[in-house]
Length: 146
Image (tube, rainbow, N blue to C red; front, side, top):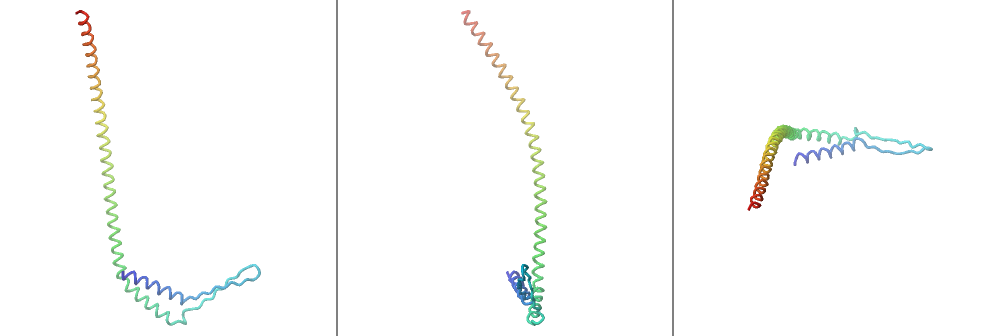
């Protein structure tokens, strides 16, 4: 993780530079009812150490551009792969919806066919019951004669 270490070092150095460049002291003076804030700043021009640190930071930043370019290339590749994945998912989703619609249509047809078959079976059962009743009546008549 050399890249992240460099970035952390750069940020730490920049933080120190900013501290050295701007030393801010806030004092509050109370006069009557109102509070007045006074800011005092000192410039970094009197600190040659700060200038050297800035130059070192710039050098480190230039060295970090190559890994940053690699990271950016990786991120672009990831983005392209994610777009391809999204397209594949949308395609699969649309195909699945089409398949579901087709299955619903087929199930509707099968349901209608089954209802027709059940209706035919019920008619046959009714005819058989009538025949049974007729046969039972005939059997009773024959038994009465004998």
